[in-house]
Amino acid sequence: MGGPAENNLIVDDGAGAEPPRVEPVRAEPPRAEPAGDAEARPEGTAPEPDEGEEIGPALTPREADRLRDLRLVERALGGDLDAFNHLVVLYQDYLHAVAARLIGDWEAADDAVQEAFFSAYRNLRSFRGQAFRAWLTRIAVNAATDVLRARQRRPSQPYPELDGDSWEPPAGESADPEREALRRAQARALSSALAQLTEGQRTSIVLFDVEGFDYPEIAVMTGVSLGTVKSRIHRGRLAMRDLLGDAVELLRS
Image (cartoon, rainbow, N blue to C red; front, side, top):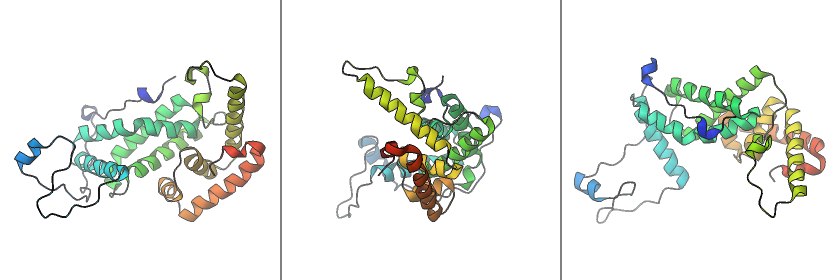
């Protein structure tokens, strides 16, 4: 079966897709630097401040990623397909992991991720400078939900890597067969419990307990209010506590 590394979707303008004609993202442009300074400075490093210039706080990794994404989106909006394909490479594995846990099937997740990127490209005009990762995750969640509804297949496995031996890491000499059996039993119990939740509760639980997103992020991704997210997670956890019994410790504290 296909895995995240095989999902190399690249947008090709030869297929007839026209770049979206939209207003550019309103992101602050980088400060212009003299050509000599740019050549002397190693690629990817910040320029030295001018004498007397106040040094601002360093960007966190998340802020740096967001700024990088904004610049790539702005270039893509201007018709640069390479910029959009760079976003595909950056996020395809992450989106595949999210979709696979929502759908429960690695190959079906390939379809959802491909549709998510096509949808993102077609609707790039709707991006207004918020966190691109959250905006893209919302599209992927919707695509995965559509695939899941269309397939009408068996209950989803939130840990697809446990579905077969091909996804198991090599067992070390100290591998405990009893512990492995317990881990598999817990994963099956979690999968079965998730399948009995409502769609909204299930998506919120996966994003919160499996992917580790916080309430505001989930609200953006799923397009509902913060109160709705909290309610879905609360009600879903109450239901899963009854369904899981002793295995409730699998949920995030």
